[in-house]
Image 1 (cartoon, one colour):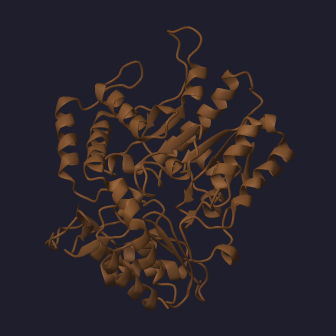
Image 2 (cartoon, rainbow, N blue to C red; image 1 turned 60 degrees about the horizontal axis):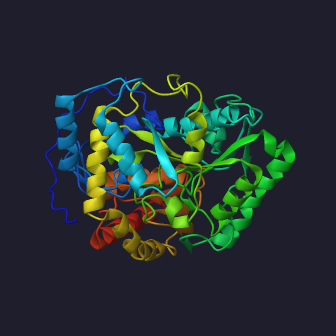
Image 3 (cartoon, helix red, strand yellow; image 1 turned 60 degrees about the vertical axis):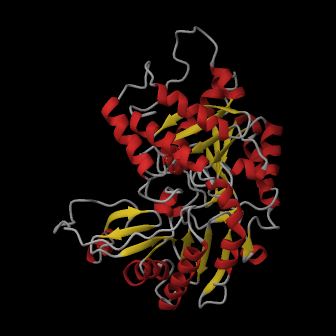
Length: 448
């Protein structure tokens, strides 16, 4: 998509930034040199001082169709006028059922039901609760243990934080949930460095689940949750056949398998969901972010009929699952989701991402000889570029790169420690890929 939007005039900004405690942000450093945004269109953000910033992060893995899509904004406005809110407990709106059906249509066959929530964090916690309730309902109440993966990220709820494996996200919050364990991460730089797509080495990492089965007993384990690509930790694709092997082990031991596709869903890896790319059917699949193109908060869990049907017993007038949120299937989010799915379908953005992947990978790999680049990983329209730490310790070079990108090079990217993550909207053109790589090159050299 050609983006001819010009820079915009400066806008007024608050003269006091102290009241807002920003999430996942170095607040004191930010408020000394703010990165403030005032607008967005297609592939670009616009700063409060009028600069045009190319978005190499799709906002935060969200805006797969680019920014400022009038079709989505119009759908939200129209819905707000007709029905601003309706309670999701014991009442429903047509748009919620329509959206659920539309999502099921593009999901892998067998994931036939959708439980809506409002974020990826809520989706992860919902999936974990469904897993525990499923085994309880199925007469296996002893299956209470939840298994995550080292370096995994499943949001910031107590459940998602507990099964998550990113140390800084966990260490301030005590013991979190009990009865949680972790399989090993899937990254081995020595054997996987500079890989395009799925690394050849690493399917054997799935066998670590057998270690936990032997340690705890299969009859104590409810579910395993993994990301098909670990995004927030710095873009770590699943090795070839790893997910299939994990599926085989979980099926053998009666353990539910949950794919966290909050990042990988809706075209990021060239398919509606990564489960399709890898030919693996999980028991549940979480989504958020791209379902509304980031235009409204929404998340959800796709659930296999075998799981759903287990709950559909007992008196027909009784609540089957005591879980949900005030804003589950919110009317405005449903409207945004339906409009977003129309764009994905009409513009064939998933197919576009699939075709663009080799060119994107080649472009990013051209950075491998830049100073301090120690590894690059690509999969779909996503890349992680590892920089060596500088003398000030881990994370300092990455933070300098974030600032250099925004303030000096009109570029938005994401960082995870000293890893630069590139995840542009799926509308990115070949020329814009080149522009992003040129700007990243300047950033890497600036922080050398």
